[in-house]
Image (cartoon, rainbow, N blue to C red; front, side, top):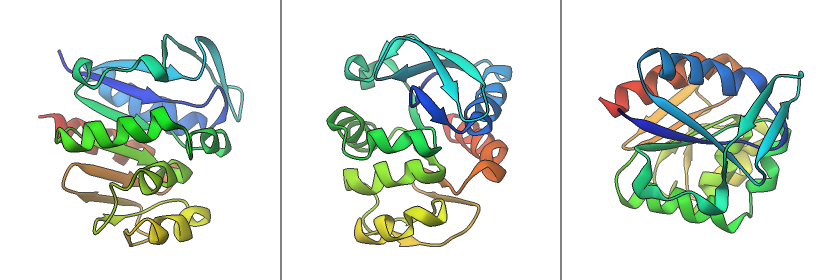
Length: 168
């Protein structure tokens, strides 16, 4: 069974960017583990509730087949988070899928893994992606090697499908 870790803010994450890809992946038999800076209840921007069962500091790349950074305003807590940046690099170097949606693409840019990669992000993060060396496309979804980026809630289902395809 494949296993994926979702890195999710404790609050104000984008609800549909979390639950739409998760539903697609779980329906296909993929285990989705939610990680954050705390264990316990997480609350999305529109009130969606989920549980974090793993601290981001305890995520081990060897235990997962992919990592997904969930967007929304709350994701900004990970922009300079050493664990979030380290994990993006570890998964990338092991050629495992590294995905982000919405503003969470800034995490990938700040980790350095977008240099020379085509990528997209919510428009507020465009400058950060360019500063991080990405070829910003502005498209709904972008796949470049093992990096998958989506620009917002409208791309949530496509993100889930793309991650699933990358795992096969």
